[in-house]
Image 1 (cartoon, rainbow, N blue to C red):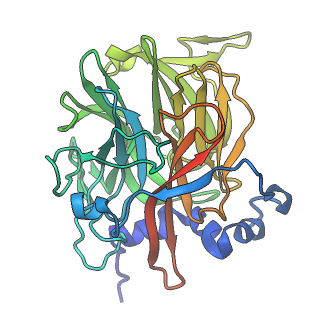
Image 2: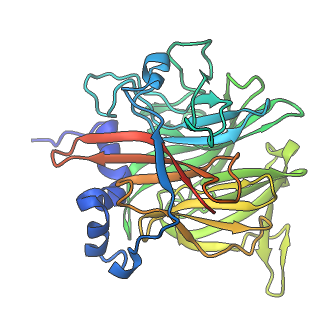
Image 3: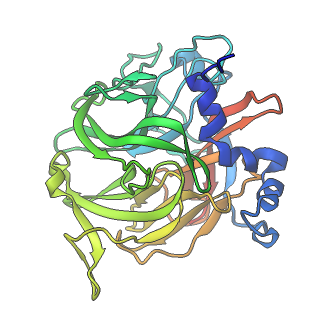
Length: 388
């Protein structure tokens, strides 16, 4: 008998969060220790860890009845051209779980909710609108997604996942970095990793209608290209781009910059590199950090502090670092969210209105867990509050 080919949702549920699923079992910590990922001494609670504030998405919240956003992830916050905040979500459904029921369940990605509410307000983040819809109503995806079919330029893709967004008040243009997903099942030395076709850019001149450009930063056949998952932050005339490999693999973090008005010119991107004697711009990239990185998030805060967050996949914790400049040096990691606080977590995107000081760090953290029957029992985004 011929084996049935798994559906997209089945493949994604099986593979994309394989590492996180292990941490989710038995509350996360026991599974991580048993697998040899960390030693028990690493799992020591700290009094200054971030704390859960509220869940932001779900079938029981207004994101569902207002915009048909129930099960979703990521929620990457970036400053819009008008100064408010846009939140970019990945694979989104009008059911609580990616696999339903019922099916079909209106699979969309990426999509955007918006808010002008400060995350430090007593009620936390509150969404007030969605891109591409006036008032209440189904929020569509921002741009074309192949959905297990043809994306752009004849290239097959499973889905499109946002990396980060940036907007420029001078032109009112928005640019979204995204990944074109080739498969969720690319097996690597540390277990299943997803593999991208390429990293690309999409743009909008009205904040609603986005279009994918033909620019592509191609992945390598061995899935080792370090320019697939981006986070972008403007400082002066330049946008600084921190990037890592797809799929939460071991590997380097690279730093590039490009003038804000030349992001569509690949020749304008400068690497930050070491030439054997000193560091400088305009060179091949040299790793600024090494590790097993989840999706990176970097923001320059109002006081000039550069803050970085990511899932450290070796220990299963969301961590932060700080620096005074994008080039570093970057501080040691500080654990913000432990796996038993939010089993099956990933993300950890820094809200741009965060600041230094006690309880002024705001993180958007995703959760995806499954029960013993293999079915999803949590797929949503929450707000955590901590201290850099």
